Length: 427
Image 1 (cartoon, rainbow, N blue to C red):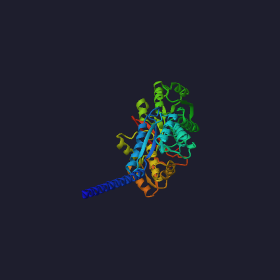
Image 2 (cartoon, one colour):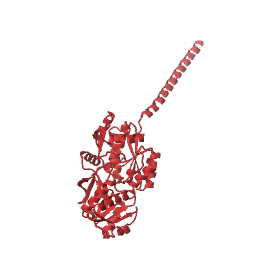
Image 3 (cartoon, rainbow, N blue to C red):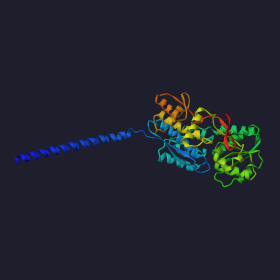
Image 4 (tube, helix red, strand yellow):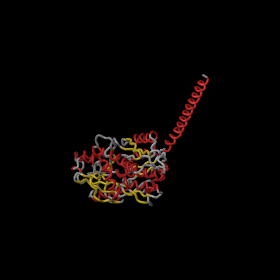
């Protein structure tokens, strides 16, 4: 009996020791897992968050989906090539409605709510300026627009946080004036949107045109979101000009160009960057605008622009849209990502800003758009080599103001298409 009790006691002790050992082992494994999990989490690099301010509604809504596609395509090329230290580029899009107040609100939501490190846009120069002044610059966030052309952007005090990949209207206005005289328009009336974009381009055009001997009959501003522009048309055509220079957004120009044609106010027009829109021309009628010419920031075709066009077509199953700033938007997105890789950070906007000219400007190994070149660019940066990004839109060499210099393209509406004339001129 005593022996049996001793045996039971021994078994109980042994059993308890096994349970204790198992418990200690389990606690040790849990402790290791608890330490390892945060370490794994901490080692995972953060994504590069880029906010895109797009005009998905309002008078600039034409072609905005294509700009979203261009930014997404650049992000996809970066991500397929390895991303930012293995982490993805993420594009977060917000609508500005082409209105400064809505654009500032959208930018603040991207900065404060989404914690984006950089902002693409906006489309309208007035929105870009408002966002820079009231959101991006105070928050020390890099901002790059691929479409805002107002000369006011150059002189804005921005602490070097505001850039653009499209030429200023200081260049386009000069070429537009030369084109007007070349077309035989000795007298013109100018109708323009009364904001930073419209006023800036109208002013440059008018000064150049009159200095070259042309006569400005009337310069007439107009507001946004009007159901009709007949009163403005009456004023701008009062002097019976040879042609109307139209400096507006597609949503406004569609209305007043149709009214000008239907009402017999004018049948001769010169168009600008924002009106290089197949959707707007389709709405008015291709035949009605046959032979009309316009200007746009652009560069002669290159193998790099051809690579971008092919990538866009392959990805979205449509021909490359002939309107402003698709290539410039791709370039802006790619440059933010390449600068982040060069800076070694996806979260430090100041460091990315400081690296921007290092990847965009000479010297360095030339690289361009498209998956293959983007992958090569990432490899070169990883090896400590200098790169010089030459974009889908041409050279994107930033000056001290964050501006680029590019030729101005002369284009034409012909046979139901927007066609390049093959002419690219500097001011």
